[in-house]
Length: 367
Image (tube, rainbow, N blue to C red):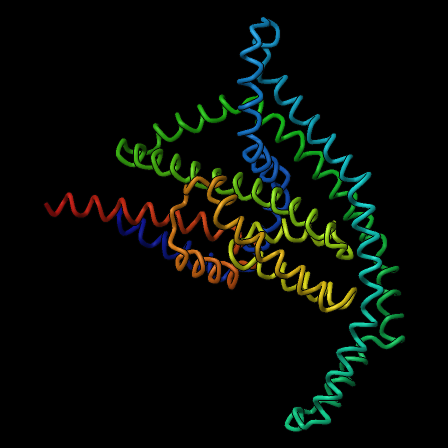
């Protein structure tokens, strides 16, 4: 009788979930929007945990009673002061240079447009586009940027200025909450982890608890190693690329070097994409010879990174076949965009470890 009742209740609940899918989906989206500062704060604290641990260990070696007693709070304070200092340095010195470079880069758009139109005209004259309705395509393209459409877009933007202001206020408030949550998470992380550990012991069976703890530990090690090493590698490559491009007198060297470092966070495809973009921009802003020189220099830098810098930083932690990396990045990018391309590699490494352990356990059971 009890099982029949539970079965009927499950059918009713499932029916209600299906018929009220949109309401439930909107409610979950609203809940996630409310909790987003807390989620972001915990993620930020997780990413800063390694640096905070190192600072705390350094403070514990001072043998000064006050510092050792409050090493956790002092290390968190020092860490955030360093972050704020770096943030203001970037805001005062790097951002203005990037903005000036972007303004100059936007000035090249008419030159790029004229070159593209001349190329299309020549190809059309040679009969390449005979099977395509090129005239209709160009009319549709230019109509989107007509003065009437641009005026309408600006009018809509001014009308929605109040919405933008409210969104900006909400963004500032969320950033403040994220900062507070991340500070509390770092200071009281021992208590939070202890609570989660006790909750797992009470709610899970012993075997599931032990295996879950093992997989979480392996996941943390792989993910944190990947994130920290890729970020350090991107910083090194970004600085080296900026220096090389500046030495070659490539226009917009700082902006293009930062672009190289950011794209380098994505294995294989990121550096290739950055090299192509830099070559095209250098070709239009300077000449073909300088563009070719910049491309060769970046390719040499990529080889040095792939064979010397990258392996030393990563330390072979992921140990993945290049084919698996390429497949995981392709699948991750197809379904989840840039974030999927970035997270695909550590997820593939975790799945590899789980699969290999499952196969080992299966062989032990068979034997």
